[in-house]
Length: 115
Length: 115
Length: 115
Length: 115
Image (tube, rainbow over all chains, first blue to last red; front, side):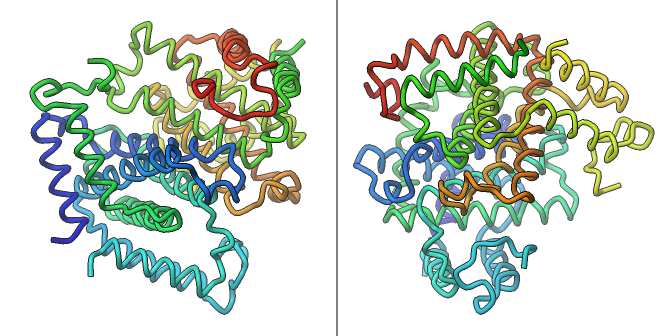
């Protein structure tokens, strides 16, 4: 089975066994997701960009755990709103490709509305 | 191919074609991820929990786009640090199951260090 | 002396004594600020709106600490960029008053670009 | 009058005139605050640390606006929970001074629980 489908089902089961659906409103899940993402910021905030490539094992473990949380809440929030996450991602890549044509933006990080 | 693998490769290609690897340090990607996640908050901030289940089509589109961005940057950040995202997610679910045994936490949203 | 001025000077001293100016680039401070703000989300994520008004003393202490961190990093970031925070806030209130005329938006939480 | 007191009163008036108190639960305000903070991240995400010190005038204006929003929502959230923001900030500085004694942490950005 596809990884995103596996995680969706796992998260459903997890919540059901704990009677947590009552807490998992889309609003609350968006807060949980933002909270977990910010913990990633904490891993990197005082590191230089160079150092952020070369984490030691305890830093890597922390980042791994936070990325997992972000993915899990992303999957869960999409599920609660019946959003097909993979379709959404593929459409977003296509949209980004239109906004940022490779020959125009090469090597520049400006926002597309600045071109 | 698995969806997370497809997205990983798509993001690599996207960055390569635009010469954007130079901007995609783990530090910078953590900021991008947190920025996108916060746009999700904006979708929900003044809605009641009840209303957050019943988005109209323009709200759903906005949430779909933001969730896609979150997923894409999550995949990209994991890739830059050689983190296996699916393994990370499965390990996190196992860890959460230990922290929150179903018979103990049923119907309660306390943090595991409050039990 | 005014509170914002007191905090600005206190934060300068604090950083100077610890030789932390090297870490306090505006970029890094924006990450620290976002990280602290997200800890506020953690305080509220599973609470209903009603419950969020009635925190117990340990919840209130946690929120108080996080709000303090947010204020301190806001003051610090403004200082590093020579931004006059009070002038900025007053200008923003005036701008918001134009965007959201009281007679037009009364009782509605729509964004001003939705009117 | 002190700047934080002025802003508190201004925000109360602003909300009252628009009948917005109904939206300003502490939970919702924490989301608004985190959302605004993340917009600061957007200003800095692709800049190097060096570049983040040298914003052009349009970047400075954007940062100024976002910092103002952050300050305003911080003041508003504190007010809704009857938290004395200046006292909180001063206590936090004192707490930080204990956690990070200058002679011990000089020039290091480790978290205090790593010493």
